[in-house]
Length: 141
Image (cartoon, rainbow, N blue to C red; front, side):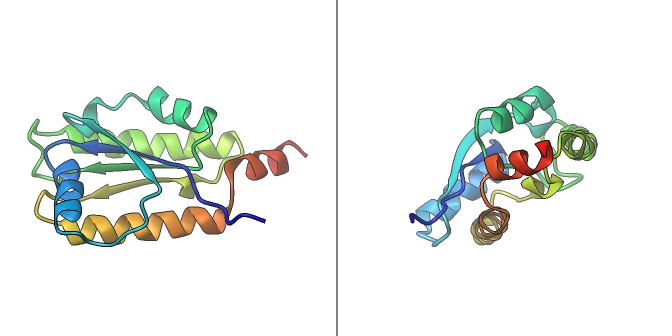
């Protein structure tokens, strides 16, 4: 049997978390590359339906990376993202999806090593949870 490799969608702020991801790459830091990165100008612009669509189309986990609180280039976008993630986790629970499959982290442009560490942690957590399809089957029983 083939080892489960999680499918993770990573929505990244282009100014901070996205730049941190780029720094991790150019620094050749090792981390589990199970995520498909999608950069936004600001995590505050991330529509919650994009997160739900990622899950409905087979993502095993969704990662959102933004600027540290107080450092948002658009003033309060990261606070808006935090509010949405809190609500989204409750919605996921209602659908029988473990809220741990959605993770929000603050990563600055200079934190390439933090980005690599957090992505490796999240990938391992999702791997431990197993495929989302298996979790959905349990919820339907």
